Image (cartoon, rainbow, N blue to C red; front, side, top):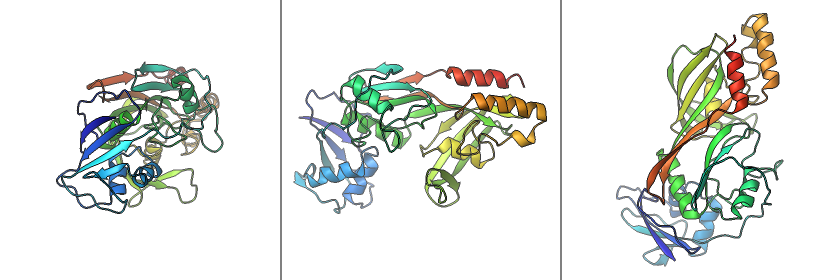
Length: 343
């Protein structure tokens, strides 16, 4: 068994990939850490690990303090060390499917994919096949991490079905935990581009709010002043298309569900084509009849939200270096932008 010594639960410390399948993470609790239940502490420090997985680790005696097993309700102590033994769970019952993947980068630890619009990331009700995970299980022959649960092997972060662009997938649990920690600590960087309705007056804008589940429609999220999870989006206008639409770039400080789509809609500039947050009809009533007919034609041909995850960078936890990837805007979105420039 290989031991991975980690300070503050997965940092950029130098590590080597274990040759066998069981590994141990030693977490040094920060000296300023306030008392917190061990299960909650591990959920914060390994944010991509499902709560059920953490519970299984504790129940099976795989979380140790001073060589002794712990209970989930026990509190962590500042400056102490916790040992977390990661053992592979049974392989997920996800059917491998030979679906082509646009692979940007791959090594023994991780794989970076340029996901096409229309592909669901992982199996769920209504989408048990044809997902990115089905393709990954086939491509990687089940050599994927298990921290995110049986239906989401390898998945560190997600993109909405109709959002295109870059995401990273982990091939083992230790690398998954390291990458997940980077997203949690905001050291992993993601930059998106999108066409939005309207012409914002400010070229640069910081959008801040809480984001929570919409009480009327559980499939939707909503921005509000005091409930949910805090979210911060930085928006920069790159190009105006008359007064009808704009091409913008977005940098995320947080990674909430539908964050860009919710935030742009909350300030009156929904993502073009977004059926969930008003992006298919928003601006048609405020423009002249000729332009309205032209835009209606574009919407008929463009059946998704005009959102693309263009850049992704993070620290490779095995190679010990920062790596950067970029995926050009896909053809359908390029065509939309070209047609909007004719306005």
